[in-house]
Length: 405
Image 1 (tube, rainbow, N blue to C red):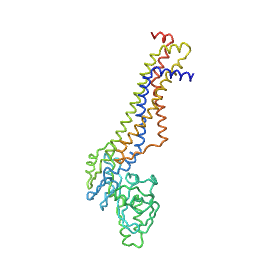
Image 2: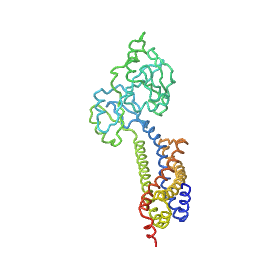
Image 3: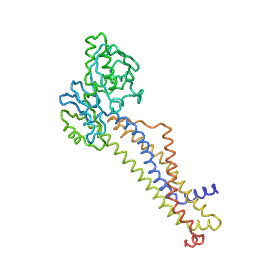
Image 4: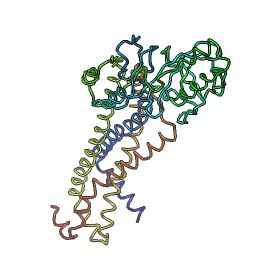
């Protein structure tokens, strides 16, 4: 019966080729939108996450007397002797609209006989240093290790001397283009305490060692880097922070944040469009197959009269729906691939221009998505045709034959 069902279904579709072609084209368009939206979302999701992680701080809070040189990305502190105490840091983190607040402390030290900047950061709250790791990302930085800026001479696992004591390079950060960041050595606050203890006990206490030992109030911050909540307004948060005495709020470049928000809205709209297209597809198939069943009532009555069961009649109608929507889905995958090509040559270039690198999914993911799209399109067709098919089998053969002139 399976072979007969497929043959009858194909014959039924061939009776009205124009209608079959239009229905398949509608399905193809809906599937193309969904298929392309999924792959574009997959491609941009990782890029957006990486870009978000590396965008730096939205605001930097520093002591009021600190002079700040603005960079495109707010990633680290500026050299200063002024600090913020722990109470002030806690007040900054508690301001409404602040999603993350991470303190940093910059100290001057002597590393391998050369003056260098050591920046202490809090790994638990940090969002500007560790995202620039590629190798050993996610691993905790030991108390006797540091992260080397991109322009420092240290390589991973190299050992440098601070106060005559060894300090190992855990990993090297990728270039950021921000000079003070790329030239610095990063340690945890616990690591900074260890350095201070080593320098204090170094013998002999030479002038260079003495300079490296000038670490006081180690838990205070040279600056606090702030990441805003997604729905927070920079002006409102800046005003609230400015009520804290003795601080200065530095605002970063809002272009990258604006671009990220716009891209999120764009792809949210694409996802909603794909959902609407799927719903419209089910309704379209239901409407078309209601007409098909109504115009073939006599045929269905004859099939029932010669012994076809209601289940076989339903299978016939559903097979027709699966064939036409499955073929439309297969063509929609091809059309979706063309949409992806257009995206890569237009919006993809724009995203890369604003710093969002689009990484296309692997071939296995594309093939899996194509197969799922074709199967889902056939399943939606079956779902849309089920109600008309089910209604037809409830009627007796005599009633079906009598319904036709």
